[in-house]
Length: 157
Picture 1 (cartoon, rainbow, N blue to C red):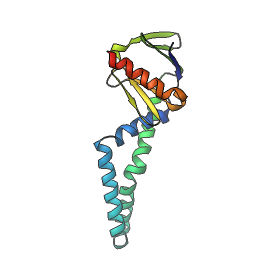
Picture 2 (spheres, rainbow, N blue to C red; picture 1 turned 60 degrees about the vertical axis):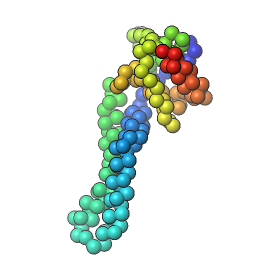
Picture 3 (cartoon, rainbow, N blue to C red; picture 1 turned 30 degrees about the vertical axis):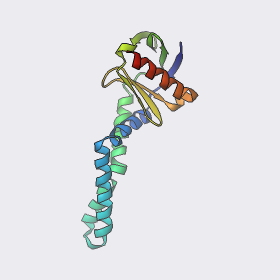
Picture 4 (cartoon, rainbow, N blue to C red; picture 1 turned 90 degrees about the vertical axis):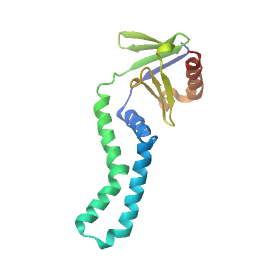
């Protein structure tokens, strides 16, 4: 095997992946603009409004920076229960070799749809909605070389 990794996807890994997806899109820009506008409105009108409106202003300021990430983490905790543990992934010139317990499968490079590199993790997609999450902790010092290797395999297909 050219590269061999054992992954245990955690709720934190899924949470990070979701947050990268949210804040790396137009939704994240909208969330940021809404939060900035709510902070400005709160600063401007806080001293002149009734207590109920003060509570609503504070709640609106907390919606995207606090409440949304908390809800995404709760969803990730539910999702991680359905993710297999101790997944052994092998990468070589033939493709990806997946071992989960006594089950084995091979994925040809032609069936790999893409790779996404984020600051704390990397995702190798086998379909539009499925993939393998490899964290920096799993990849270690091999992160850059591994990313280049996967990119070279995807360019050839």
